[in-house]
Length: 599
Image (tube, rainbow, N blue to C red; front, side, top):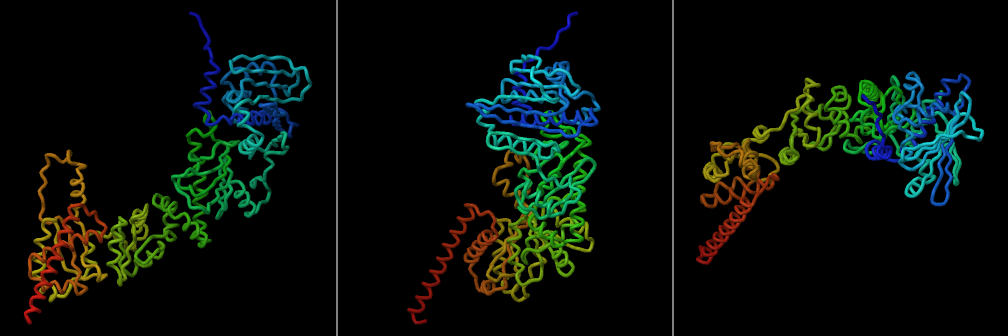
């Protein structure tokens, strides 16, 4: 049986890297930077006396092109290692598993990322163990050459690439510096940049947790410079293999927007998203976190989802929880400030977490018929007077006018998370009673008028009941505010299904079902007896006029309650108003004739 080796299409692999692995072609800078960092760390482990690592990046522009040179004084490679590591795809240049676990460049494809921006890579390297220096030249067609390098060089590695065409236009001097700064922000090895326009140490940055003593003001300034915004406060993020800070934004954030974080692995930048390690509810924070124990995915733009990632996320979440617990006990004013700005964000967290609910509910704000109140004010009121809440915003708007002049408190639970939070109040605070305002609640809220008014309007109510039967609605006399509101419409339990059937959404589904139509679906029209209007209806004796008045009141109540008014209801309103005007004209004519007759 013959045995063959796979043939590797390097151009196909490069296309794979470009289209499926890396999100951007600027990752070649990160890969070169990572290779230099790993090489320096490997030399530190191999040589006891070696301490000062150095990375140098030179940018040398030419005519419609630029030469980019990465060099380090790391462990370097001998000829055998060049064949083994630079020319074998998928094999890491780390010499042992014990050494490899301390680095993140374990995939052996980092150098190939340079082919995303160039067709040729030149590597000059000399092993720290001594011996001859070598030059390796790799091409995007899959060929490479190795030659002895005649010039004298120090131990380490130098990588040279040429940027031309679009890549030359894209990667100017400033773009190179910006990417080096982002990727190498936390790297403890100095990165020296040398170009035509400037020379500088890219990552000569103040990192608070590396200082023996660091004030809160210095940390806040660090965060503001890093993220370009001001913050309320900062939370130290400290755990096993974790160091960093969470800065609480002063801007109103949303869970639907992607947050800007700075997530690092072994001091190398990984991602800005951080959704796998920063709790979803903490979208009002901007975090900088360095982790030591996580495993990156192949592109090194995220982490493998395993127990270590879950542990890191739990540690960060605990740091945030502990901060808010402490804040609610020792700095109530700041707790109020944060809750006011991030009201919705904290509500989303409180809905799912009992501890957060108990900490923040007193500070959360809700819309009520008495204005905007905090959870604390609502609970305080519930000890003295009835407190109800509406699930829908429209229901809240309908009921609010009825409560004018009363002590009753009504909370608008129609906004996101509010109903869920209000429903949990009795669960966590046993003595607090907050009830859902239902259709049956109107009977308790509205007052029954005096018996003599009920008697005087008996005939009118009898006729009105007959008028409203086709609308599956009953009529009732009540006293309520404001007096200007002549009638109040309250839908019955069957109203929603009726509207759906009318729309035809379930018409095919409902075919074959025999629905028994009830004489009373539960809908009610409350006639307001607080003003003089209802009392004057007692003198109306004409059934036709009563029918017209009731029809106008019915449609008017629908409109005042922001219920859907269709073409059928509008036609009824127009006909009824026309008849009312005709009744008025007839009455005027009869009065004129009596006046002319001298009556």
